Length: 261
Image (cartoon, rainbow, N blue to C red):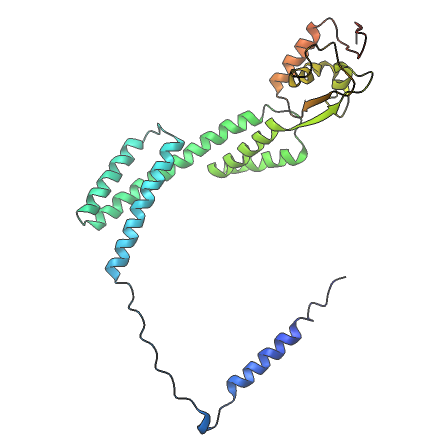
């Protein structure tokens, strides 16, 4: 049930009305209070000190951005020139030439910003190429990929990289559990629609469970298997090639039988 949206307003309106009445009521002369003496206000920051603080902040920001850019892209082409500008800005600050210091620090900050943006664009491009190798993405994951591609097209490097990096880590780590049942085989398991829907991908199940399945021809009922949800295209191709090279394409619990799918 939606509450009456005006119910809360009644007390508030009453309070405002009472306050307004109190403010407009003029007290008799006997009740009037002499105005208090206004306290002395603290003197404002001298303009020279304020300008100096801003200049120091600009130089500190340029140093910090340079360090961030150097960490993200150690061999960026204009790193040496940016360091030269910073050194000159620091020298100007020591000699009291604030105008020159601000100019040099601004140039250094701009160069570092450009380098950092480029570094994230390069990183985002690498992440996008990696992302395009995964299979089995959901509609929601595909939408996140589209948003990241849009950010990359707009040259929003940091945003694109953060989105793509997070999605890649999610895909690489995503898996689910499958409990082996009587009559199961890697061939049967892999062919299930909720797994891979392709029996020739049984080597993917085997490779993900080498610590449990020493021999792909032997499974035990009750075994818990790890299923990778998003194998890469390369892993899928390799799995199919491996499956085709095996003579035993079907594996049953209990007695091993060689059959042809």
